[in-house]
Image 1 (cartoon, rainbow, N blue to C red):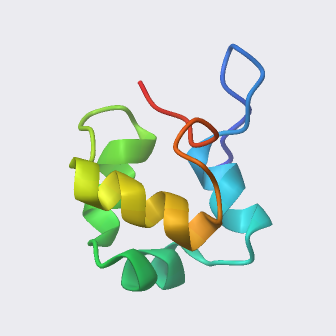
Image 2 (cartoon, rainbow, N blue to C red; image 1 turned 135 degrees about the horizontal axis):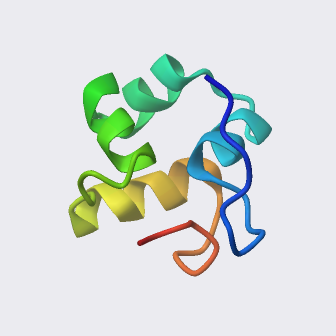
Image 3 (cartoon, helix red, strand yellow; image 1 turned 45 degrees about the vertical axis):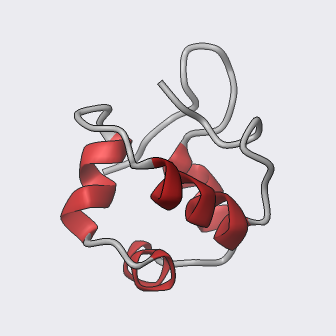
Amino acid sequence: MVQYKSSNGSPTLKELIRAAGYSQIGFCEKVGISTSSLRYYNNCEKEPTLGVFLKMCEVLNLSPRQLPHH
């Protein structure tokens, strides 16, 4: 499934993961989450805990302001 930029024009989480050179599975392993959790985050069905959010920022080398959130 292809995801496009969000309506505000900023990159989606999926795009940021790809741009950082990770597969979704590799990213999940690095962050310590399941692929189903990532799917929930991508689909805006759930929000990550603060700890997971910060780990995602660290793995993607982004500040918390740069990572899309809902």
